[in-house]
Length: 189
Image (cartoon, rainbow, N blue to C red; front, side, top):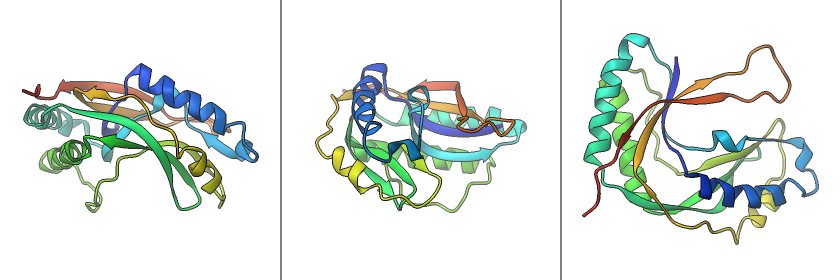
């Protein structure tokens, strides 16, 4: 099964970002972008790819331990950015040190469970909102998000998410995500 560890923003945060994204979708050229669905918005902490089902029980134990060892933190959706000319994302602000620590622990949990992880890279909190099939100037969209500032919310859980890729080559079809399990972070204070 195709898995990743993630932080899932709560419905009010998704709604706030959704209003900003609705404005972006009305901009010139927006119809050439593939906009991600709100129900799939998430912050990937550790992408594991295809994971052998025999490794999942150990992975669950280790992710639970990682969550328990990490204190809750506050996050908010904040501005936006791009990766090159192909991916547009919303950023995060607030407890980024907590987010990086949780990402490192999720990555380590996967590795120690026997999951073959890609080369470790520095974590950059982002939530993908659109992708381009070909090189596209995404700067106007990033600039339109310069003033976007969501309300703070507590990050209280680490989720293990299964990604079900669309089949049949349907144009515009998006992956469907399902939470396999989630674990509470250690309460602060």
